[in-house]
Length: 142
Ligand SMILES: [Zn+2]
Ligand SMILES: [Zn+2]
Image (cartoon, rainbow, N blue to C red; front, side):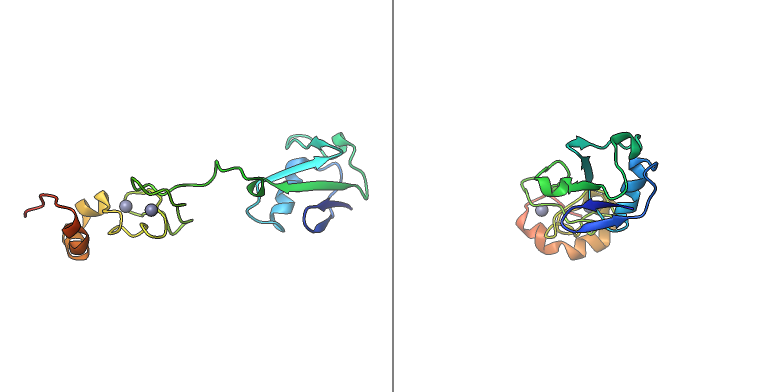
């Protein structure tokens, strides 16, 4: 048994001949949705190596940090609506019609004037978006 320390210390019951990737899988069960960076004695552990390769032994402590906490903004999705810079809402922000991602304000097809919805469900669209269309002087004479 050895230990993984992040905010809490996790006792890990894997053999030290395990690969780093196995350890990450193991940690995932305890620390979900974390982009893991594991370090031991100042070295970043590579997925394809074993713990033994880095000199991890029984009672060693490996340090875990989550990339998400490090201020990396690559993974933050922005709303796909032009002129909106809000974060896209996770899962619920994905439009099932045009498969783009929107923030919580624009996630409904009516709110982002979804082009796919327009073609698939013209009638319903017209009903739901009559208010929105009022603001936009589009020539939509039927
Ligand atoms: Zn938005
Ligand atoms: Zn859409």
